[in-house]
Image (tube, rainbow, N blue to C red; front, side, top):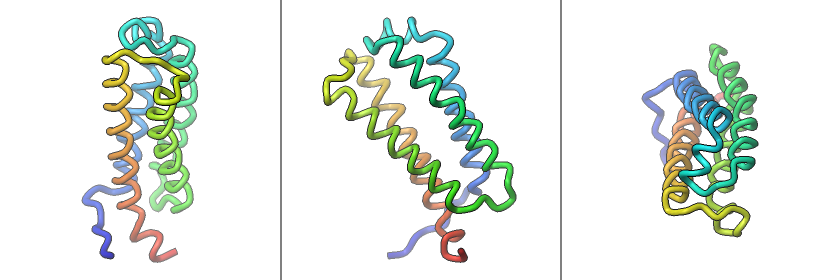
Length: 132
């Protein structure tokens, strides 16, 4: 199997991932009630999800500042992204949260975006892993 090298540097991907992560954190921390009213996802769930994203965004930005981030740090980010996507699907399917149609759209759209980041990051670190 051939792995294509990403056109983007891992640093640029991580910076964009961190910015979107911080933006989502701000949305969920600053106006969880509004988002909850639109999505029917409990404000407390949104708030805690936003709070989790703050150190994640900081971690990604710290890694992105490195000239050659250690592959294991990027793998941690990828694993976190995969877990986020899984939680975004499993929580409503299990009944832990009961979003409305807009809530499902919100969850699936952000899960799709996070999936793209995980794939871009995985693709970008393949050459790094080959040399480690």
